[in-house]
Length: 246
Image 1 (spheres, rainbow, N blue to C red):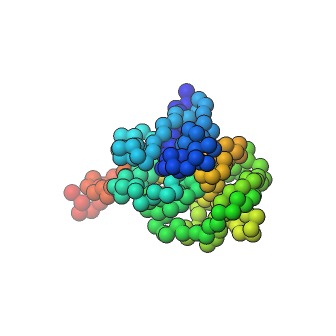
Image 2 (image 1 turned 45 degrees about the vertical axis):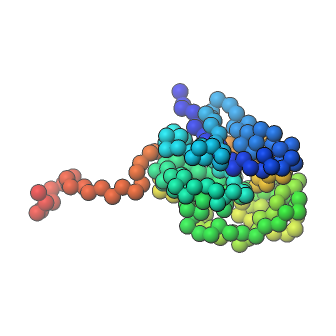
Image 3 (image 1 turned 135 degrees about the vertical axis):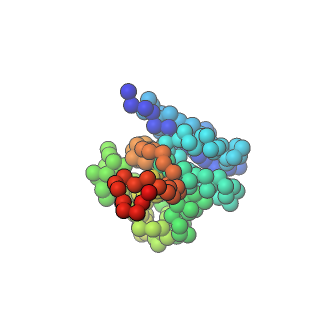
């Protein structure tokens, strides 16, 4: 029997508390909507939010997480540096990390990318059309050639990220901009996926294609090994005889 993929869904959780319009769209929180999209026997779901002790992300929780999804926006600075570094460590050691929408500016994502992760943006309730560039990629399984979101926040290039190892989706917006909206990287022993849609004032995380992409990304990014990527081991004992080596 295949083990369940252990997913921790992290959400800043502030907009749902402060803004009635967001609470109306996401009464169970953005994390609740993402969790509902992953409901089923394949995934074991845990949620965590910013205001929990250690933001709900202890060493033990991360060690038992195969994939961490991250949604943040207004409170990136409130995430403790040591928690961001702990997330980075676990990704390097094998955990998957999925950054959603404004998580491009989150501390863990910026640590993993090593760049500013800045971009252009505009809030104008624009139509977004996502194009599937790599239909054979596991994250694109079951996703049509293109799909549309009737209203979203615009993100535009240049997106200051390292060139993705694989670019699965690109977005076009009603105002004319384009954006690299589905990007894959490998970091240490872990896998990272950035997926652009998901502004809090739009019901994006109820869209079936968005949910399919996130579920596929969890399968693709799931932990495959747990190794200490930072270890420099002194191999004192050679495998073969070496002259002068005791």
